[in-house]
Image (tube, rainbow, N blue to C red; front, side, top):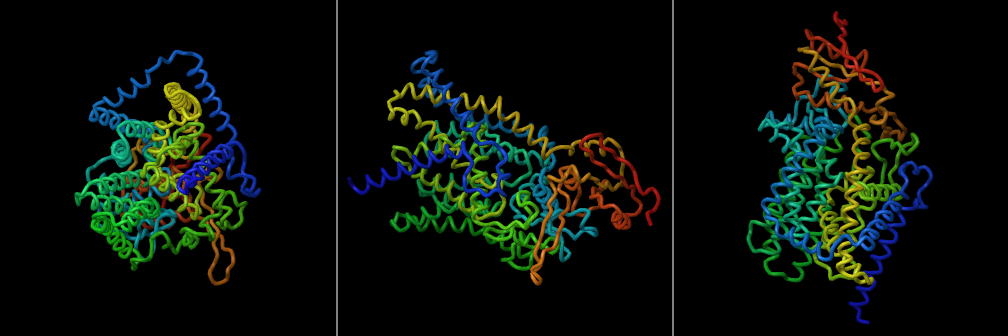
Length: 611
């Protein structure tokens, strides 16, 4: 046997072993997880495998026993998809997807931020809209600032990169409701996904990938919020699309556009952009060493496009921190624990709810647990199928590999590698791998009948089986999984925001400060209780971060950077409220008391001078 054939055979068996381990991981708990991390996976994995087998069995019965699916019908369906007028298809999916995202943003997320990151993006956009990079530090920081804000040295700004806030600034300039910015970008991304699938493979793969994205609850969840994953994905898709055009064509605009797109992704989510680009940069190096014609010029133009945004980013953090190499992520005198918010094995910047109150130190075991947990959640939430990732392996089994298959799977592994070294357990950090997962799943669906034929199932029967299986998976997701998915998200992170804003609006009050009062019993899930180490004494120091309850975040998102609004929202700090009142004399002062189990209340306080 030749070395090349032996290598191919070994790689196929490695993939088969990975698939076996993949399914075993759905049915059993990993044996090496320490007891203290048991609560990190509070859901039963066995039902994934169970539901998958049930759907497979039903699909088998429908396909091979009922005889109601006629021969050749799927060929006709495939051909009809190819005959769809592209402009009509793109227009329909753009409008429908935009409406669906708007409905999610309005009815599920109540058009207000649900995470403190989102409030920082919105506040920074409001600062940008005034023509400044930062606002003056609030007179009472504890009433108005959250952990994701930096408020020191007279400057108040977001600790996050400026990319998404700049996009939101455009929304402010065009007087758009900010909650529709992400739905617009998500709908544009859907168009780019289709074009990318068509350019890398064929029109059918483009249609499959865009339909998969259309029904993904994982993507829809990010699109309905004010999170930066959606704009970052849009720029990443453009980067890959122009990169492919750069390799195919000699026009100079494509490498420049690819570099610009990567740069835009970098100033939005730098860590994700870095690891998304890694496989493509390595491939450029491979082409350079093969002395591919014009590759040096293309790489140079690509670099020029990227460097424009890199220089802007360095200038931006220089203006805020005084140094182009001091990231805003790690600038905070108020919360020293946040200086640990960077990749690597070290103290994590919070006491994890899984650490039983002890200082949470992130190490290799914690990284493996994070990876496994996120993989299970992604496998559930990407499409809402029992096994959402099952098809991504198929393009690598017994088929001639397309270079884009290899680059895309390495993109996925690159994102996993980057976040193996990051302490936070959250699948949203894998959002940047969506292009790879969507296109490889579409490729896997297209190749699955050929795989079934290799084990003796006729090609036409294999097509019918895959068609029925995927159809039932979509029905399972839409009818069974997604109602539970959306209800649980709304119950956990979205309660009470609309009630408060509506109550204040309907009260007719003006020239007012609203102090938001929250019962600790109800916001413990959202509280960040941190423990830091002082550098000198190496002793533990308790640090309590402000509440980040959705009601409080919704209020803060209404404030302007100058804090001179007609209605100003602040955190209720009890006796410390008098200090804020002295800064704003002549106003009325109300407390909005949030209650989970009974009606909320809005009542006036300090009718006489508290002094």
